Length: 378
Ligand SMILES: [Zn+2]
Image (tube, rainbow, N blue to C red; front, side):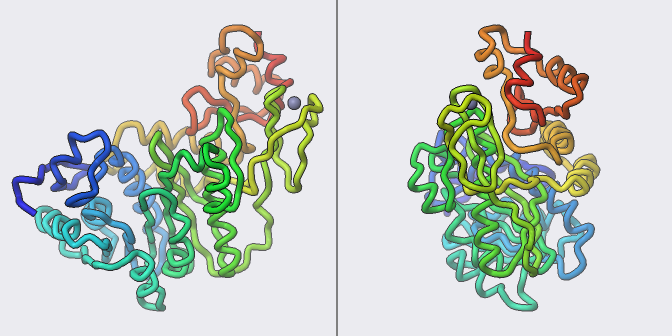
């Protein structure tokens, strides 16, 4: 790899050397090494989440980056989170690792190691008492499902597992059979499809964890046009609470309802409804964890959008699944969409809970039903 093929950019407080073509091409090339500049904000959120997490983690503070590419995330973790003892960047591509080593040198980072292995093999090698990660990341092309078992086994009891999915078409219901195969659940194409996608990922993770007698506690979820990412705490114990179920969606009246058993009739208009799931129906956010992310964010060099996003996560933690969108409310009333602040205030004045959502800038989370909401739209 020639120096002239690399360009220097800065993310957070870390200088990165990246393949030049990855900065100019629509889809970043995999050769000589893959780097996605659009994932900068995703890495920013990782830095915030990991910083907040290691503060309260007792045990060796090791970060395992199983699909590291050029190691942008691993070197940033080593460089930007002082309490991290060791960061290990693993990839099958030796050229990517060579770039990673240069990046570590450039930042005078000495606690970042490099490993050339297939991801599951790497994770298995670390599934030992002394080898597990306090934080384990899985950031594949496409679906993370094939790595979940190994990743959970390689995470310390009480550690954090973060998982990315980029197979958007599968999770959005374009290929429902593929989604069932990879995530054990069926999506429904709705305006809140991104929330269904996140809940399918968490549901799949929860089913894998159950098999391994592991309990997962979702801490934080984040997404963009191009990826979903879930941050969960891994506990080596049996989860006795049933957090799985379905979201019933009625295309007729717009009703959504969380159910634990299969139900196919809308309880408002009696139409035949669609069912998304099985998926995760419990909380996707840990409020205390979001609070600690909000306070960490202030001390870190991250994108401006992060703090607004986290404030919304804080508001919506504890709210029921399946948000409503303003456009949808307008369409159903054949009128202009209501304003976000306006409808939230009206719902709250009528005794409902209502908040913004990080999942959609014009989305509302509420415990009111569709007919109750529409009654408040002029
Ligand atoms: Zn209905």
